[in-house]
Length: 64
Length: 190
Image 1 (cartoon, rainbow over the protein chains, first blue to last red):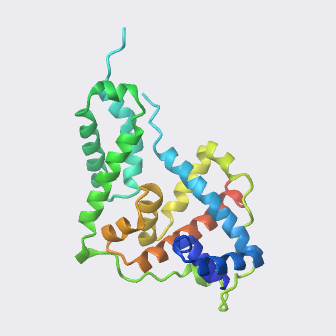
Image 2 (image 1 turned 90 degrees about the vertical axis):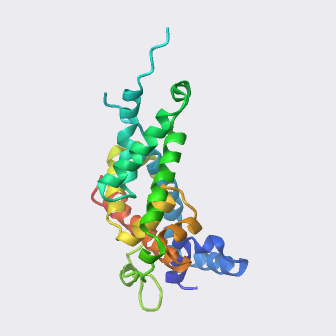
Image 3 (image 1 turned 135 degrees about the vertical axis):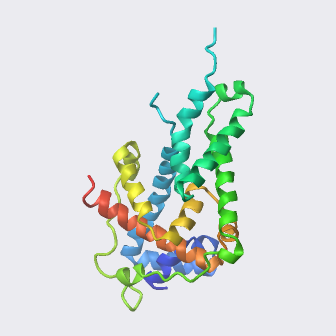
């Protein structure tokens, strides 16, 4: 698995739906590739940031 | 004595954030206004004591979500679907022909990103990054991440194949990570 394929599967959500073989290949790639490891860490953080953004959008208007 | 509940003031308090939320998904503005108005009318029909006692957000934004997806479903009926192919030109910037990263294109690791959730300026940068997405990935991304729709509902509403959906989500998440890195975490925004 090359970086482009790994990143596509990760960011599309396809990886989460994949079978064991693909998940193992992805995990192996990530172990070997520091760039994809960095991107993956940030991708996980992005989930938390987007959750915060979603909550921020729902804040009531404080002005009278 | 408990103060009388001012429904008009309560609605004014929630109208602006609901409109801000609806505008992310519906254009023109009149569509977003209509969805918000329908939601507030539904709330006004409720027992007022319930509105006073609890956080109204789950109810208000839950109803608003349905109003938005109903309108999107009407707009993107199968005969006017978005299922033309989407070419991800971003990959040509990020990856070499052999599928490996172009050196220096990967963002550095974000350190303590959650502390930035206290910053209004950070959210303005997120707004910019989301609004810079191409139209089709933006539509898919906002339904998934902001309306919290499942993939199947997104595909059915927008007339997409699962492959289209994956391509749009991938483009959106790659671009947003790069944008936040450039404009906030390791770049110009702070």
